[in-house]
Length: 83
Image (tube, rainbow, N blue to C red; front, top):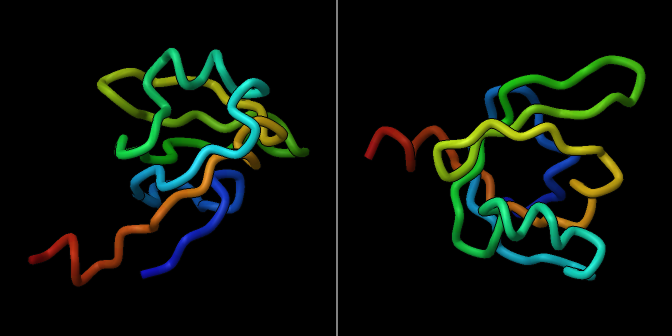
């Protein structure tokens, strides 16, 4: 089971939020559903260190990579997705 920062996920990777560092800095994301236990999928990553589009709780959100660095995600493995 691999855990990494949300900002380090690639497009179309899926995972579950395990930890939120400094929640006051990402409070807007937490209020929109990016909280511990929520599944998140990276839909798109903008070039040149631009924002990333993620899908969580039925919403698509644009997230700055600086904010995504405070969210730790347990990445789903292909075996877990098939089972």
